[in-house]
Length: 53
Image (cartoon, rainbow, N blue to C red):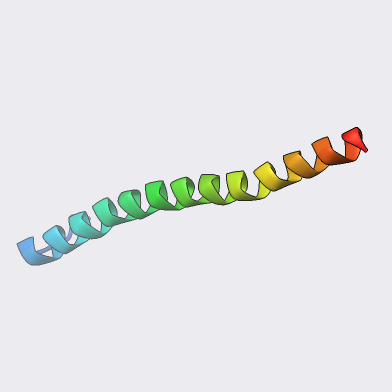
């Protein structure tokens, strides 16, 4: 069984897609944390107000 040859252009494209996937994954994790904070902060304030009333 031999390893198939992939031309340089395809290799470069694959490498670019892999790098882009890591970049996008990091960005999605960052945005998820931003969204969590945006939801948790008002909820925390609501809990505090409920305890004070």
